Image (cartoon, rainbow, N blue to C red; front, top):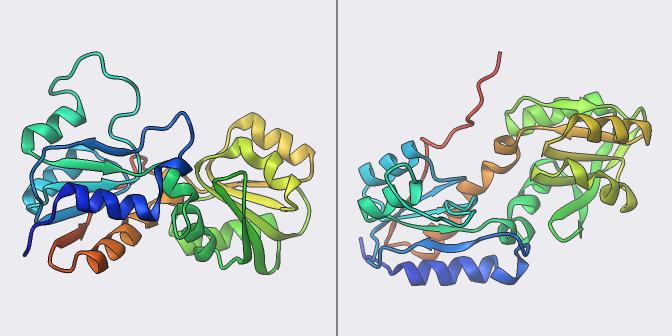
Amino acid sequence: MKPVSVGQVLAFMEQWAPQDLAESWDNPGLLVDCGAPVAGILTALEVTGPVIREAAEEGCGLIVCHHPVIFHPLKQLGPQDLAFRLAQRGISAICMHTNLDAAQGGVNDLLARTMGLVGVDPFAGLGRVGTLPSTTTARGLAEATAEALGVHVKWADGGKPIRRLAVVGGAAGDMWRQAKAEGADALLTGEVSHHEALDAKEAGFSLLAAGHYGTEWPIAAEIACRLQEAFPDVKVVRSEANTDPFEYL
């Protein structure tokens, strides 16, 4: 193994997902910098206690993930904070959030590809909209989503055939009007509120919620694949400890 600097990895990730693609409210980038070269990198959707322990056990001095480990400003720092625990163990963290949502080959391109969309175009900066292989119903699309992503899916049926689908990983139920304006018949996202579902149904538009984790977790494997190609002498591990926080009946 030949160690690389955290700066080299950051430069690679920023080439893929430039910071200027991020939303103004976001906090992506190198959020914990322990200053040491790394011989191992762990990729995950987010930093959690189990993920930190996993990184330490795997000998990974860097975690590259999607959700920012520091999002709101910190007024104090202690053992209760994940950033503190990372620094305590000498583990740096690079977090690429909405810039990786919007980036080519990022979260939403990956979701569109997983759903088999063709003729894919961006919408509203982060999202993607494209055409399904065949026309389907809201229930049929929910079943296909559950199979493609291996997740639980709930849906609000707008009552119309679905051929053009918009996708946005995470919590984007409020983007259904923008998706409809782009000619989509339905929006697949992670989280949808009760009132968003009601409003969409009234407008004859279908909404599918496949879970925040469910719509974004594939990016950890994609990050791992790209980092391993870019840094073949470094150990790259996709997290097994990072799982959906919810349990289902």
